[in-house]
Image 1 (tube, rainbow, N blue to C red):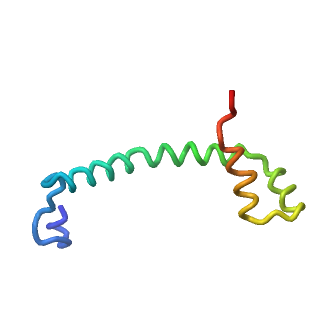
Image 2 (cartoon, helix red, strand yellow):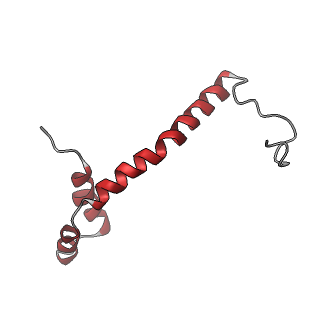
Length: 80
């Protein structure tokens, strides 16, 4: 397919060497699960109340403080 598009001159050996096989397998696994993980992350971000961010803004928190002290702790699952 890459040859038909004119991107490469010869076939790419996706699994021709152990290093290439490992890299291509890692890339495919990341591609497969990226959408699901992004969906879970987006759902978690939408569950954080806006009022918490407004309170932090009123108190003068920077973006980094808001992220590290509000967003990350509220994204973590509750401890048992």
